[in-house]
Figure 1 (tube, rainbow, N blue to C red):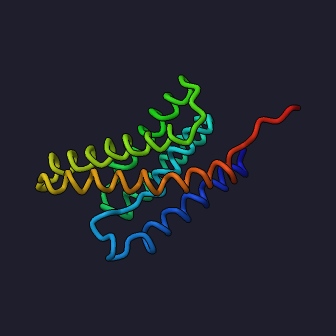
Figure 2: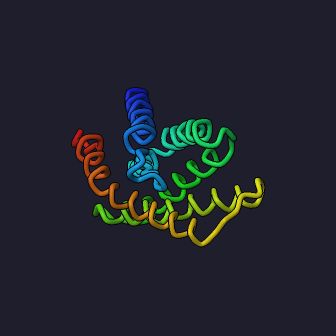
Length: 164
């Protein structure tokens, strides 16, 4: 249990470093592919609630400190997304890869619009139609990149039930 927790913590840090360095180049500048978000969705599919909730909180704290310098947005939204997806997984029997990919798209839209709404409401930032389009495009790109990432997570990190 602790070994899995440390493994996912290191994997989350690796995803955060990867999306902060190589995936934030000028070629895709307005977009930020959120591999850490894909990891949170994958953790929700593993049906380990308490470690996943703690990890999503820690990942949200790291994203907040590195992104906005204000603690609160991702610290609340990452565990909320994890909880909602794990709730859906516990109530359904979908085993295909399409279910978490669609969930990445929907929850990425929810997350991004929530962050922009909160920043607009509390910080007075401007919110335009162009930003709405960029949020949608970022969610679609994150969902597209989640297909191979979720497949790799599922193959290498998905636990098979034992017969013992």
